[in-house]
Image 1 (spheres, one colour):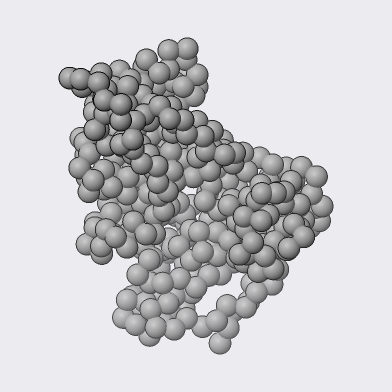
Image 2: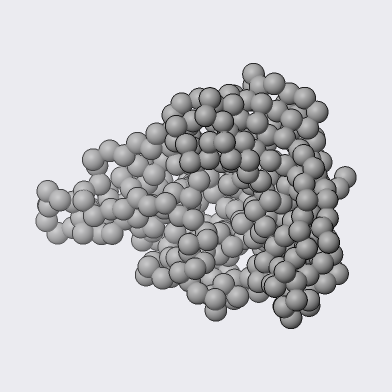
Length: 370
C-alpha cells in the first residue's frame, strides 16, 4: 500500500536553469527498520539552501504557483555538474507523526508517536525515515522538535571534536546564530571555554545576556586586539567557521599565530609549533576563501560535516548526544522561527529572497499540511 502527497523537488539542468517545484509524489510502504512519517514541521536550514537555492538568481526568476525557475551562474553551475538533470528532494530534518512502520521491533515501537527525523526530503507531506535516526518527542509539539537534529547535534559535535583533538577551548564565528546560542549554553555547562565572534553590538549583548564570557565584535576597530586577548586567555587554537568565503578564518589563524609566536623563546622562519586549525562548516559567504601567508606552517583548514563525524564518533557517543538533545529540547536546544510557510508559500519571491539571506534569528519553518 502506498501513500500520496505533495513534495518539493529541485532540478538543475545543464543549461543553468534551476527549477524548484511542488509536485505530487508517491511514498512506499515502509519496510524493515523504516517508518513513514506524516510531516508536520521542517526548518529551512542553511545546509538546505545549498541544494534548494544555491547561488541562483531568484531576484529575476520566473515565479508561478508552486514553482520557480532561476538561472544558476558560473562557477556554481559547473561546480554542481554531478547533479545536472537529477530531480532531487530537499529538507534535511523535520518532525511529524509515524503512521506506518516496517516489521522491525524498533520501527514498530514508534507507531503513532510524534518524532523528529532526518529523512532528507522533509519538505514534503510524508517521508520515509530510518527508525534509528528518529527521536520520540513525547508531549513536545512538532514545531518544538523540528530542529532537534542538525543544529543541536552539530553544536554538540563541535565540543566532542574539541575533546577528541585535545583542546579545552573553541572559537566560533557568526556566533549569535541559533546554533551559536546552543553552543554557548553547551560550553557553559561543559566547562569548555568559548570565544564568540560576532559582527554587531546587539549580538554581543545577546550572547553576554546568555552568560558568554568571551565575545569579540569583528566590526570594532580593535577587533584583532580583542581576539588576540581572548585567545591568549583561553588558549583557543581550534575554530569553527560557517562563513567560508572571504578572510574570516584567515583573520582567526593570524591572531592564533600572533599569540603563539609571542610566547616563543626565539624566532623561527617557520612560525610557531602551535597547531592551529579552522573547520569550515558552511558557506554564508559564497565567495572564494582567502588565506594569506601570515601564520607560519603549522596550521590546517578543513571542512566539517556532521554525518562523517557521527560515523567516526561511534554509536555510544551518538546515543549520548541524542539523549542530551531530548532532555533539553525546550531549553538548551530550543529553536525560534521568524515565519511559518506551507510548501507553496516557501516558493514565493518574498519568502525565498528573505530566508536565503540566512539572517540571525530569522529562520523559516515549513508546515507541509497547512
